Image (cartoon, rainbow, N blue to C red):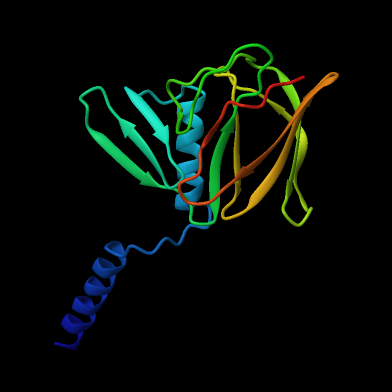
Length: 175
């Protein structure tokens, strides 16, 4: 009879371990990494949808059957997409990962971003994607000064990353 209880106990332990929601693999990406990858996949056209747009708080995907799926964005990071331009742009508030198209495609720019305390958040060469945009994840609830330059032209603009702020910046004309 003791053997039966031991076997039953082991069986219960195995079943409860198999049903556990705990992730024990350290290589498993966090939800933030997964959402960032999903956003990138729509940007570079590795993922396909009828439409995919990104607000200050969520990614909204509509499939070919008009079914809408929303994904929460990270609580501490804000997505913003910037399309530097020379001659043509379009008005935009909420970035469409599947529809927005900027003028300067697959070109390199120096991107320099400082927060309101003067700390440098980004200082690197970034390349626009095939859609002409530079995608960035910045800290939330902050004001930033963004400088984008290419050759002898540059544009400087302040952007904010508060709830409800624009995720699509199409006003940075290089002069």
